[in-house]
Image (cartoon, rainbow, N blue to C red):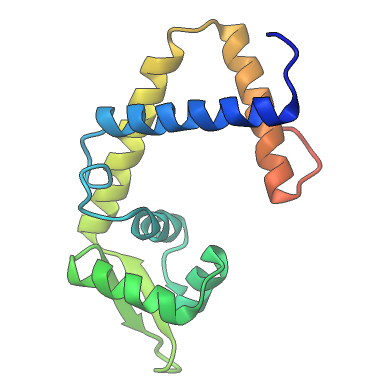
Length: 152
């Protein structure tokens, strides 16, 4: 690759990410890509898939948004049948969120489709290229999360 300035590099990354996003969208058949649910809604469903019973405040903290904003998103997800609100047995002001069967099935379907698409895409490059890609992606992930280690 020719020596590019960091600004040129960033422009090329933005261009590649646009193409990847469009490409992923065209290949996905799930509700997320068909516009049935939004990305913030999916992020909440995905969060709840690994943290069943989380409170509204937990979701708000994870998304770094207000609990009022989470309430609106959760309202729509509950109305669509993707999650349930469960009152706390000791404090009725506390509401726990749990994926419904429909929500769990959706998250599993999206994860399965993403996995299959990645297998298909990455089968076209060598093992060493995949390892290098994962190494770099892990380094970027850790920089974003503030971790100092590079293990996937």
